[in-house]
Amino acid sequence: MSGVVTGDAVVLGLRPARLPSRALALAIDLAVVWAAYLLISIGLAIATASLDEAAVTAVSIATFVLVLVGAPIAVETLSHGRSLGKLACGLRVVRDDGGPIRFRHALVRGAMGVVEILMTFGVIACIASLVSARGRRIGDVFAGTLVVRERVPAARAVPVPPPPPWLVGRFAELDLSGVPDELWLAIRQYLTRMNQLDGEVSWSLAGRLADDLVARTGTPAPAGVPAAAYLAAVVNERQAREARKAFAAAGATGSAGSGGAGSAVPAGAAFGYPAPYPGAVTPGAPSPAATTAYQAPAVRPAPATPSPPPSTPPSQAAGAGTSAEKRSGGEATPPATGFAPPA
Image: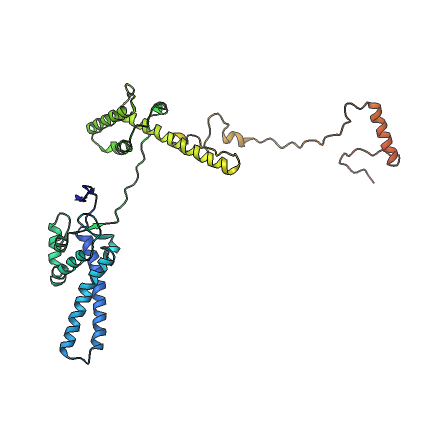
């Protein structure tokens, strides 16, 4: 990281580009510029074949200045310090205060580049870049510029280690409203890197962070609890509260959108634990093997036989049956049994 300080006394965390990446970007730029220069020179030579020698020399000098010097200056000015080679390598030219360059910066860099790059084949530029602490060549020193890396590899996110199980939920009544975000960030960074620190350094840093947390919450830490475990438990409690708020907001939104149907929250999600994996056995529930070992055959319910209402006397029921037989031709209809009578 460089120690670039802006006018507001803010230290910028810029990564200066080193010689290998700058040399590769310069090689790409020179290849493109020289290819364009050769093509333009051949075209102008054919077009100015009828001119005298002085005119041909003037055209050649103008072509050299415009293509090899003016084109890089124009490209850096219009792209704010990103030529084709720098764009391919993830580099950019900025001012010493981290701001974008202007025409005067690009002009000074281009004019000095003729001497230290074109005339000396880059020897002076390589030596100056190796000597400089931030990899600057002479043109950067005179122009007040710096070549920095824009594409920085992102660090892999390390999860915060969980607290001991006997501390989960112990700080549910702790007031965390007075803890600033800077302290939470410092605690998270410590918990993710505590295994990389020396034992004594880790212990002292955990103690200081725990003291700051106790001063913000106004509640002393439990006796006998290590400082690192106390920090992990408090961070876990904060994550649990944020998760409960998020799930409550999602449930309220789902209820309003689906007509009162709430959304189910996975078990253990409020405490930062993942939901049970597929096939996991919930405590108290029968195991999948016991469930699939024996399956009772499906019993088909028998058709319900219509019965007369309880308030109808048996004699009236019998009379109603006789009148039904008379209306149907005097023959009683056999009950439906599902079997066809023999022909």
